[in-house]
Image (cartoon, rainbow, N blue to C red; front, side, top):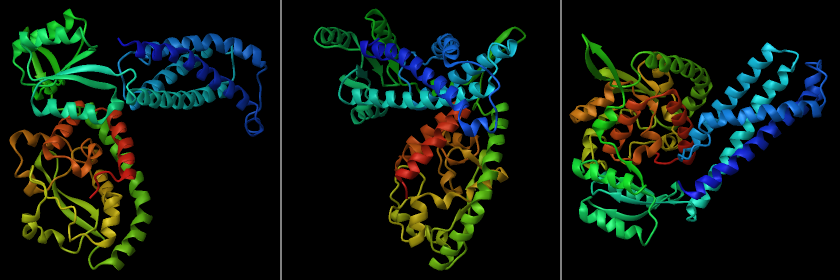
Length: 462
């Protein structure tokens, strides 16, 4: 554990307490604002001093809930995870307060203040955590508190990892050495290196490292109190989703394709329907205005229907605002020699001559994809999922890539927010495979938020 992380976490405890205290005080004074009292007259009699005497004790219990929720763990977390844990902790603390007051209504009777505290606490804690997050990032960027790591391996995963660490110093890691393998020779070298410089962790990047070297590496880290991380192989990531059962006393392990089996699929479809229905209503006036512009800009229909492959290989018509000249798809075969994507089955041209002038604009801001909300409402697609591909592209899939057809394709997805059209196809497959194996409502929320950010930055847009 680095001293930097220890100090930061220790400081967070009193800061969180003061922020929660600020939320409690703000709730108290909001209760006496005229626009509130006109709607809901004050019926309790409690001075600020009496109120604070109760709050001081309650906030200690809130901090205890924060600790149990993992807000002070020393594992470095992404910002979205910090905010998720903060929302959970504040909501849990508020629920406990409500339950306590339910059993003794005379103890404190203002439900408005409790509700206001919940809102203010979420807002204040979120702002505080965002500020702390970026302060830590600035420290990392300038070399303070970084974890000094040794990376072992020589495959593409290892090289990509090293490149990522070097490109993004704000992640808080610094590569001090890169070794291709781990034998007795490398172990002796690391021992010598540790006498000259600080090493905090060893990261095994090579998934194909021989088993004896993996065991020796793990033992070395344990014996020398070094942190240890490794990049999981494809088989190991598949082994995440499993259930254990018995058949006549014989234990059996079942590997599930995705967490979207069972209730997960029902939950995902539920919010797909709600979000797409709202989106389709909002889309009506946009379609009228944009449709007129598209018609005036070039000959052809406002909407286009493009054949795509969905779940389990089923064909469906994907809807888009037309961004190309009429019947552009029939011109594609003659342009295949100009394809800039040689890494997989996809076709891509940055300066595609078929794109109209208004088409360039709506593609840049991803407006052309909005009619896909109707596909989601119909059930052909989901709000989040792998990118939908053409039948000719799917026909060129390798066997391992057909895993993308396990779930419905999405309007946005993990691959789209991680580089959009700039990603190599194999990288896109890996990201979508990870999504399929690790789906959760919270992961979908994270992708939604990142989608907005990516679109605003126009990162990787066509």
